[in-house]
Image 1 (cartoon, one colour):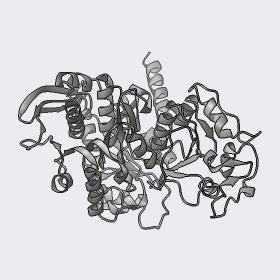
Image 2 (cartoon, rainbow, N blue to C red):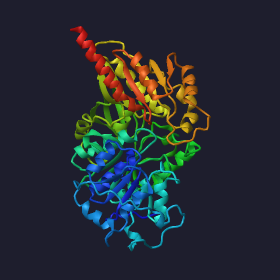
Image 3 (tube, rainbow, N blue to C red):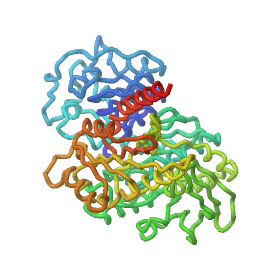
Image 4 (spheres, one colour):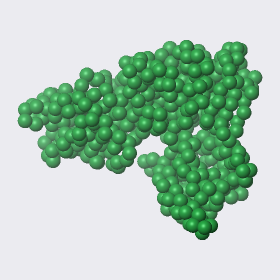
Length: 527
């Protein structure tokens, strides 16, 4: 790591603290009674939850935020904050002083001297944590550099945390969040009391992080920016390997290399050999497969995929363990569950207990999350943003639609917001052929995620490509247009899926309210 991480009481300051990955780490640090602050350009329920845990939240990413750490009255703010944070329920901290950082040389590329204005040593400065989403031109980041703050990537802090526990690191192009959530839930319910850091929110621990008293840390680890190679774990899990981030990788070979390096840093590796990239390039300690006739340590037979969930017989190295039942739909979630079973069995949890626990797992938010049902229309929010994920999610939706209890013929309506120009361009053909399980497809413009539009691809062009393979496609360029369209075309019985990693799901509350009113109107007219 470029900088060592200090967990002894030196404060942490997160630039972009509201992100799903950043906030999870910030939450763990705050729950460990460490002083934590952070900034973001917008506030949400995640930043409010962090505030409730004692984290000081700045309402913008500005150089003046770092004034919070300037010494005052002969004592550094840092030392006062350590005392303030001695209780998680501490009130919000005072606002930073409105003093310019110009005197400290902000904007200069030169670091500050060892002793900075006010007599505080560099050790009083916070450890500044950033993710790949923070650009080098970010003013707050530039201020941190100028002051000489230690600069840490999010993955540096998570990797250092993992070294303080017996780490269970879950990697893979798809399924990381569900698999890591499932493993964390299994260990929590089994009494192992793990610490958990995941890239999604789970109702069982009311968020994306949990601080346990046990010796294990369950964490989702990410290959998107190459930081996967920083992690060393007692148990590693690889769900699959595909190219998903063409903004960082130029080929699948580069992605495979990153996963191979991760595999070498795990003492024990559990991996799914149904993925060709895993089967060809990774040598797991323990393998699993949901494919009939596969030769693996953990396999399944007598599989039944239904609208209510999934059942299967589970086999361990040729010996039948018993039957399991999941509330989650589809083959991809059965595979995720098999990874959790492999971890549980490695930790010597009896299979009967594992099966009982996994049968109650509800899933993570934004993973086929049911947001509501009004006017007999069901609204589902899903993070799927890669062709493989879209196909798996729509296959599950088709199962759900076909399993209607009254036998009605339900439509599957897919609303897709492409995520990143680079990904849309790289998988243009694959996206165009990914919607066969939908009855109606609505697409919108591309969510840039900070990328520059080079005019190589656009939402309208992708809609035309999908229409070449699908009979019912509509293009609505803006979220407002999508919402207006849905208010006109949805009808009772529809199963509506909002697909994407951007901000498409922001329109769901308005639609729920609209169709709730339609339901009330229909009820009043019937009387």
